[in-house]
Image (cartoon, rainbow, N blue to C red; front, top):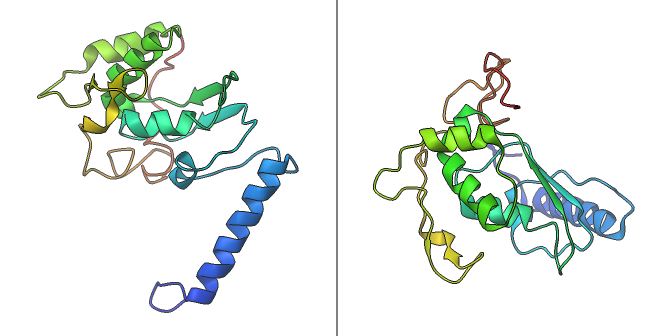
Length: 176
């Protein structure tokens, strides 16, 4: 490293390691792949049965791309998301998306969604022809410009909000 920048040789090594990990996952040799949003778009990985969102994105379009890694080509898949009160801006669009997909919307998510005030169409989904007849590209996010996912600087347990969405251990359980 030189002044925080990777030399091209290091970049090439990292890219090769990433490609090797992806090949190993695609072949089934490695059963679990931990990835960033880079893997959310443009990669066709067959047979992904389960996607876990540890840290939810601020935008429903990004969420749709993430969960789109599973259930491809007419197959079913499972998407699990860790949600907390720092993800409030995603509650309404997530509940709407689940309803459109004929999924059961948990009562706790409905309660969060009912608290969200839509101001000026932010995080509302609008007409279009993508993702079930709606165009998610026009959405804004209430928290755009704040620290990347959590919105606050401390995510609990001394972990920055960008790692875990600002999990707050003092929040009561959201399970019904």
